[in-house]
Length: 87
Image 1 (cartoon, one colour):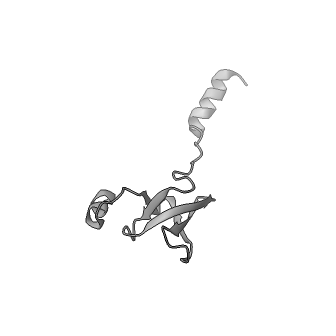
Image 2: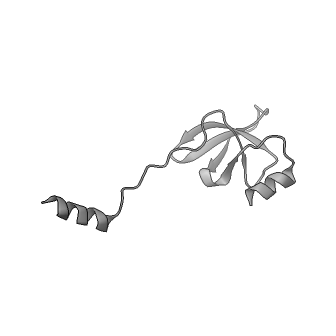
Image 3: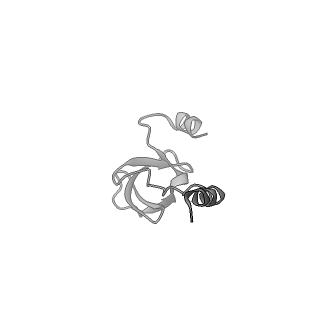
């Protein structure tokens, strides 16, 4: 095949998809959209799923979230301000 034919085939198929990387690293502070008042610590990222623990509560069970369900921890903002930022 010549180069022109290869370019036509690539245009029809489309550009190659880039692999999605995890947004949060191990140890990052985040919060879930459904409970913004609870601070979470990312413990593990496996197969597009984040395993999180509740910050300062070692006895609590791990919680599992997808990337779209989490937001980065903003600091000491009130719950109302956090909800406004997530909308």
